[in-house]
Amino acid sequence: MWLYIIIGIILLLVILIVWLYNSLVGLRNRVKNAWSQIDVQLKRRTDLIPNLVETVKGYAKHEKGVFEEVTKARSSLMNAQSVKESQEANNMLTGALKSLFAVAENYPDLKANQNFLELQEQLAQTEDKIAYSRQFYNDTVLMYNNKCQMFPSNIIASMFHFEESEFFEIEESARATPKVEF
Image (cartoon, rainbow, N blue to C red; front, top):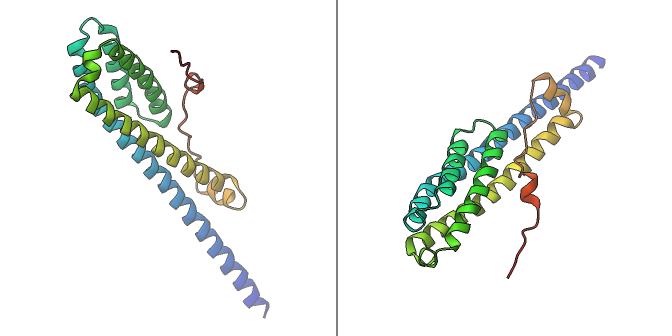
């Protein structure tokens, strides 16, 4: 009788370990998938930027510094290898794009240009998709990191070297409320 109880307990432990391991693998893969969705949107964004810059260049030939800043930031984002590098490059590109749109404000003909308006709309849609993808990624990272830290799955996570993932965060200066003046 005791033999059956011991075998039953061992079997339950094995099932629990397998279930916890598989759930950790599933969450880790969801984190990777969520990151790839952000990566796709960041790539789309970097593909739109040269067209936007060229459109603005036609109107604002003397704004060379802004174009160089946007190009440098775009290049940094394309070459980013980690979540941290992507996060920093994304923040730099966001700032550069703000400067580019500030330049566009000085050219009424540019603001009325259909090509510019379409590119601006596509970029706005992409920014929305990036924001959604970032939120989904961070939610997925939260679930995964919780699983890596909570008992008893933390034991399995440490045994099989499951590493916690980084959140995709914005820089501190981007958290400030924008000042609106009329």
